[in-house]
Image (cartoon, rainbow, N blue to C red; front, side, top):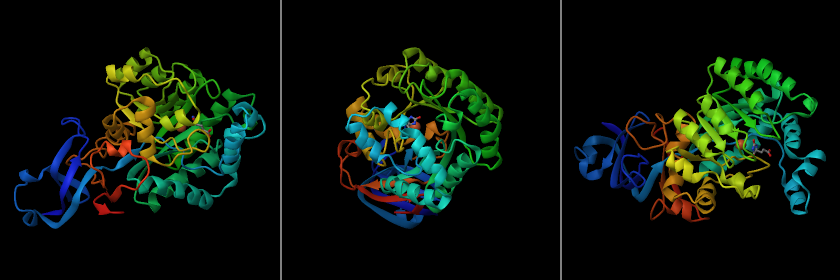
Length: 406
Ligand code: DI6
Ligand code: FE
């Protein structure tokens, strides 16, 4: 006997074998020991529902999708940057704000000053926004501590968020996010600290599932990025990269060379970079919230991603500067309106391809037998509505690991 059998639902399984949306109308979904035990058309069930499961649940004719995956966030940080937003609208440039002590450096100060319980509370509120819209897996980066103790502190908070809420948290060490004030003239010296002190510390505490860097003219060079990646590889950790967001430094190809799980942003990536990603199986993580907030006009190479069959994931990039956005539904809409993704591509971006970007696609991201029973019930007419409509609250229920959590 199965634990649960969900009936009276249309399933957007997001399995690529049946398109669009891997949809199964009038489907049935069985859960056993927290995993998906059966999925298919109700008419194909081998017996009467009551004979198959101890609990038969009525989904009320709703759509069921996989639990959403937000594969790129900077959820943990101190303070906010609303004042910076006002200053920019009054005409101040990003550089002027940074010189006046604003920008990323101000978030680093506020994050260092906050203790773990304060960070847990502020990040928890942001995480709750994501969970209310059906997120069951989230990646959280460090990168506002920029020293051994504060980077470890951020990642401890990220892990604690996963203990306190019904969500799977994957942590990413991003010590090479920005140059802290104390190293202003010595970026290579800072990379030494990242490699020799920060990374060993977070590894010793078991705090990192992956390693990321910001490869950009205003951040770290390709050579400095390589040093971080070499250290990650030596430690057996997978890598990801903030690549080609503001300019083309060949970040996508560099990420591919290291077999990165994902390369993220990618507005300035060339076709050669996309081809290298395809070869390496590196996922493209697109972040329309940052594109929107920064009023970027250079679109990521969408045609090349499709031509080279590079999987496209979508994420919120929640952070206080370039993406103060805690709604994946809004991100789905932005991806369609700004990047011309189809609603089906967008939904795949926050399910199966988001899971791929975390190396978790055997565990979650689609409704497939054997995967964790993470799924969401939606009050919608068609899956496209998730990307089409802004506002409202169509999330009618969330199941994580077979437990109804919302
Ligand atoms: N790219 C971004 O857009 C953010 N980080 C990154 O690597 C900006 C982070 C911030 O402004 O606080
Ligand atoms: Fe980011």
